[in-house]
Amino acid sequence: MTDFRQFSRRWALLLPVVLLLLGAAPGPDRPVVDTDRGPVRGLGHGAYDTFEGIPFAAPPTGPLRWRLPEPASHWQGVRDAGTPGSRCVQLPTVGPGGPTGSEDCLYLNVTAPAGRAAAGGRGRPVMVWFHGGGFFSGAGDAYRPERLAGQGGAVVVTVNYRLGVFGLFGHPELGGAPDFALADQRAALRWVRANAARFGGDPGNVTVFGESAGALSVCAHLTSPASAGLFHRAIVQSGSCSTTAPPRSLLPGLGTYEPFVTEPRTVADGALAAARLGCDRPGGVLDCLRRLDTGALATAELMQRFSLVSYGNSVLPLEPRRALEAGRFHRVPVVQGFNQDEMRLFLAQTLAGYPIPDPAAYRARLERSFDPPTARAVEAAYPVSAFASPAVAWATVLTDASFACPTLRDGAALGRYVPVYAYRFGDRGAPDFTGLPVPPDLPFGATHGFELPYLFTIAPLTAPQRRLADRMTGYWTDFARTGVPAAPGAPRWPGGRTSTSVLSLAPGAGGIRTVDARVEHHCALWDARWPGVTRAR
Image (cartoon, rainbow, N blue to C red; front, side):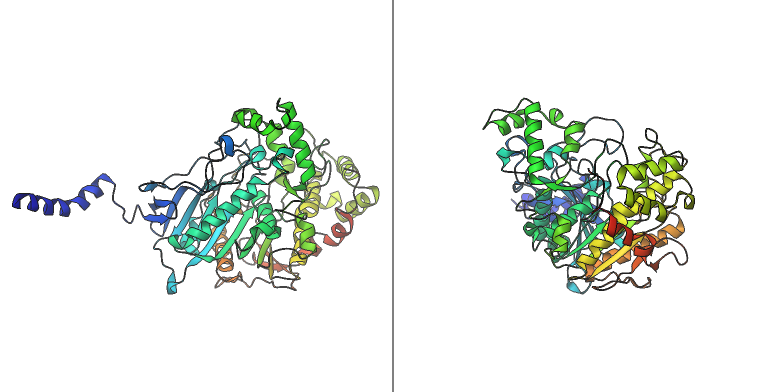
């Protein structure tokens, strides 16, 4: 018995060493957090920790396809959270290629400052990121928020949500178009409310932010009664509630781009799609569709057709821009902005097949997209001689009509009730991380998405750009912390309920400055002429 006791004592002393050698013991490099579904083991990176691939809802597969997200199951033991979960089924953002990803994709990733307690004993601000990708591509793990967490002191959560036909499908047997993509995001926000404190965050101080389709998602949550109480601040990057693009502006066969459409339109499209897939027996359409494999549904036609958010239902009773105009949105502070050359990226992808070689082609574009008086007014405000090429002139027209002025218009509506802080990202030397060919007559400049490397680890930056990234990180995280983007040592950001000034963000001396964006982007013209006056769609 004595020998056994001595052996037990020695084994008790040696066990931590053995486990450490085997890599099984939690430590500074493998932190463990106990979530409401079970413990997860992440990775330590010095100033911050990461926990990836955490399920926030049950896999929406089989009979759960096209159902609202259900709670994730509890698990036994410590779940490894060292790698991301599967991305949602999607197609490439640009170019050819078949579907990738899985329907089992409702995972999120947490990046938190090392150590669970914030200074002063209060929880840290929580920032929840909704990725872009047109609602048919993208994933949370593509965005590495080390700077926001390690430097800015925020707990950052990046989220996957169902895409395309899996996320925004509608059909009479569904009772409409339930906007499953937004429902997934709300499920992630409920997970944050239940678990933020476990990662050192404050569940009572949550900022939702996103870019492109992620920004449109934030807009939807701002105006959705179903999202009440799930967040306390919002950042809208390059995707306002009023974002829209004129008809035939990129290709002759494209109508007006509207990210928000009526529910009956989506339902009708769903009924037609189901019939074409051979699922048209009344009462059994959904069962038939749920038996189809992923590849039969993840076609380019279906993924893009069902990439628009439906309104006129309990989730979005009003079109979001109309909800802002009516004051029907959640009363939270808002940062929103746009990039100086937003539309160059989109236009560049169509120029090979639909070029703008000369002033006559530029004028023809104006006349195809707008009624005659508007076309003449736009040409007078944007003479082709003032630009490096007709393509640059047309991209500038589209940027102002589709992004810049709609953003400022929304800001005016929001500013009647809540503090609003507007920005314009203007680094025309921003790193190009797209891998896309750049037309010689249309450099990308500060195009759509090019602010992202200044907030996330995506592409290398020069020294002046790193200084701009530091300032932007400070603005974004200070806003998340206090509701005011006022980083120490950075120029004052104008804003509030009455300010119409915009903070221009660019590197170098004087790169961060206040501008009158309404004047610089001809917003008086666009407020009068678009989208209220256009040719028939």
